[in-house]
Image (cartoon, helix red, strand yellow):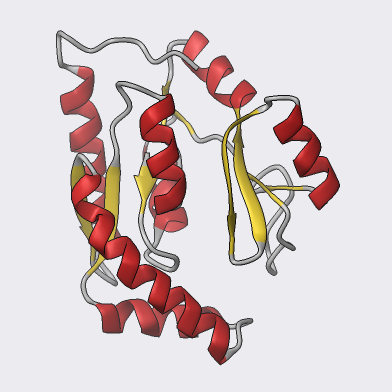
Length: 190
């Protein structure tokens, strides 16, 4: 599980991992938020209506779900089951709130906190994405401060320095190799 504050580079990290190896399955998160420019349904997120999301919750189709910034996000169980049954590793992007929930659901999963070099670089990145007003950026920064405080609950912290994504990718892949090599590693039940 890869988590961290909004704007830290979770999506970029996972995209680069997918470019470097095809061993991982990255489940697509379901959300009620609107697509950003360039995002594709079923690739970046599964974009659904609030009603469809609530039905998925009612039918137990989501491994976890949370409301973040007024939108719902959740991970469909079916995507994890298929990948794990095929003997593949699953790497997921979840927010810090989702990681806390998944700790209780997925015993044996490894949790990585992706951190920015500093708060100023995170703010600069959030502003460069565009599409958000000042109130939204300030909310995200306040949430990030709370999320940094929760980083000690993670198994590993990986620093994502702007301009050096490869270092963060290498660190995550090393963590996965190390965990895979553990003789006492138990399978994860979804």
